Length: 281
Image: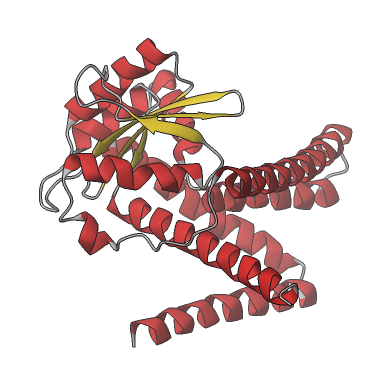
């Protein structure tokens, strides 16, 4: 029933998008209304961020902090924001005959193309590295319910193949003398320190975990800092992470990582098995 509900939601979203595109084609003015509506919703979320992080809307430095939060957004939300900016510039370019807007629109268009190309190449490289670095045996990972029963050390070892499947090489640190990092990951021009917290669901991860991974980043000269948990984070931990550029991955993010890993491994195993069947005598 839950799966059917998910499909119904997806069908509804696709239907809304298709209907909106049809109205836009029939009435170009519809695009203006869409942009105004999107801008209004975006501004409301912008104001909400000031309230959430207890910032003053009338202080310029707080605006810089709130805008910097964009880098912590999920990729799909960044794509939506970029698309809205591109369409807004496109509309202004046709509405106002201004050389500056024309240059801005063309620059954004080129940037969007280059970004899409880089993301595609990066994803392909990571998939190739994962294929070369990992063995071809498919062992399904535990579910999130199994993770809730793991020890802290088991959770650390559980996470390592997930990140290796993304193209990283890595290791689990010793129980003592780890300088605040449970995993050390290395990628292309990248060193990542990971602090793993396997907690009870009702217990939230606090500031100490963020401070530990910040300290580890200094010791290992890391370029990226991650705290991952099967639970959630306190508001204080979130604010501290933002100030120290620490990526927080909560229970929902962990579930997605497990699913992505299993999907990649399953596809890889299927291809290898099909390859063996084709050349079996």
